[in-house]
Length: 161
Image 1 (cartoon, rainbow, N blue to C red):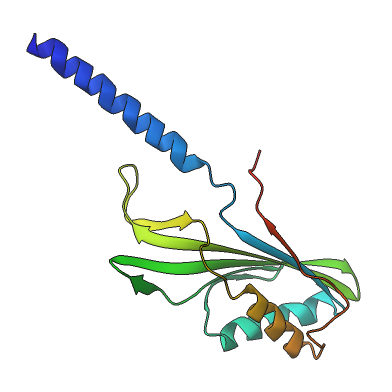
Image 2 (spheres, rainbow, N blue to C red):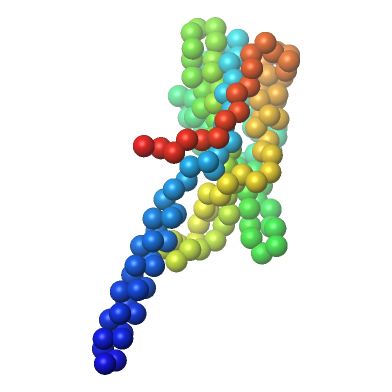
């Protein structure tokens, strides 16, 4: 009788574990995304982006010459949780005189789940990010007015296929 009960409990634990793992994979709607086009060559925009991130005291994790930057806010403790915002800035050359800037911001919490080691985990961005401030600083470095004729497009991220 006790063997049957222990087997049933083991099956219930496995089912609940797998259902939690499935819930963790769905990351749609977590990020705030902004797209902007500037009238500047790719190389100049890359240098302006690097300098802007340094001036804003963001921790640069990656700066790829192909146009990818990963930067983090300084971690802050809220209640018992350590939180930060992760920014992914991607640059793409539209033509020799124009560069497209794509900024994605997602909130992260440091902790442990039943399925992971201690690490940073993505969460939905609850408050405003510094994406607009990053864009304005890049424009300032490029000597372009922040009221540019280009429009900033804000949208929530779509689920990946």
